[in-house]
Length: 418
Image (cartoon, rainbow, N blue to C red; front, side, top):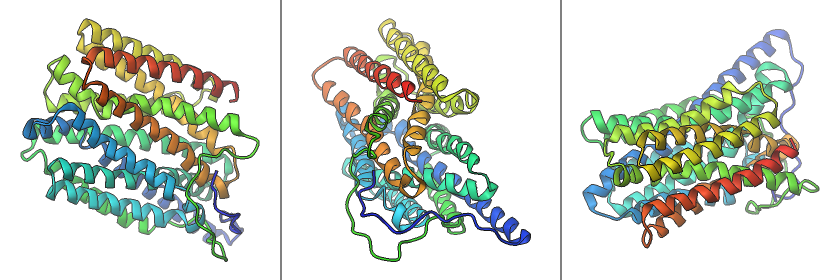
């Protein structure tokens, strides 16, 4: 829950106006919806561009796998820090300003990747990338819902906006890994060209978001600043923590495939092709995005149950393939688990956002994303540390068991409250 003192603002109401003006306003909000969706997609895609490139950095500089997890952890620290310090501020200062700051941070990160790409530079660039993502996720999710309602004039359209938000969030992560891997494999200068491409994409995103309408009225009086707290809305603690834990478990699966999975492929399965590394991450995240579309008509409880089955089944297949050294099973299991992640993650975010009124939604979503991104970071760092003293296979199997246990417990609690 946002811990700002009770603001005197509300989300802009939909007001009656002459027909021509209403149509113009709806078209403007409709354009804003897709502008924000594009920006969301571009930022999240940029976040995974380095995933298939870590192997190249590692071969060039000779650092161990643990260093890769440190670089990745810097991203997670940035995300969590931004969510904790500023993820809820769009409830007060507006959605659009925070989205613009987020895109600007990603542009800074892209320039850092281009100009300072030794290990220390990678850590700083990933930290800045995480800061931008942390500012964006809850803000853009809330903004898309509000823009959609104003564009259609129907409050029920917010659920459709939730599907789009989930698809561009996880779909963007999949796209970035694929683009990074493809450019690294087929275009010269693999540690430069992917970032140049995203400098252009992010610059376009910044321009189009400038034209997007704001949906939050700023308070007339100053509001005392406090960082985001992991505090549930009053009387809704069980539902909030069920959603947060489910989101944690879901992103723990994604963390595996954006940090150390390419290294697993190279060391265990001897797959060193850059496109293959990017395509593996793409497959997991793409399945997360597609499953939300394919199963959108199911009830929320049915989506959660199906998501649990897919996530657990996929991880079991992945673990068995690692034991039997079957690379196709490893990748296929990841894709199946990814489909389950998409359903579980969307249900978790949707459940959390529905706990409060729109004027407080940014804060609650920020708290939920804060828990979720801890799942993207903490288990991965633990894996990297474990790899310093243990072989790859037992570390991978332990990770799988942990995530399955979390997903089953949280998923059952979430489904019971759906």
